[in-house]
Image (cartoon, rainbow, N blue to C red; front, top):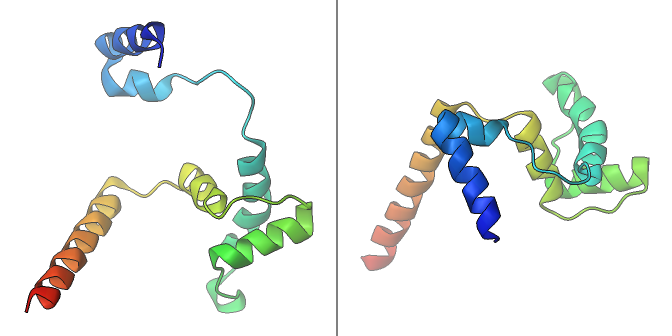
Length: 112
């Protein structure tokens, strides 16, 4: 990381806090693979739940490759969906808490 980058971030933060850091757009090309993933996956997930199959990451990747001819990594659909449909803060907190609780109970079970 360059010193100039850190200076820029510190300047943005001092002017507007974390909101200013989130508002700044990093230069560079658009995320082609994320856009491709969202173009295919978003309509699939918007279908009524009763009529749609369970979409796993592997199935999503296969569908993206079938429809768009693009191969993407296993993490790409998840990253794209998190950008488009971020978890509300309360839900994200509850999810982390549940994961922590699961981790604790696993450790307790293995210790006994």
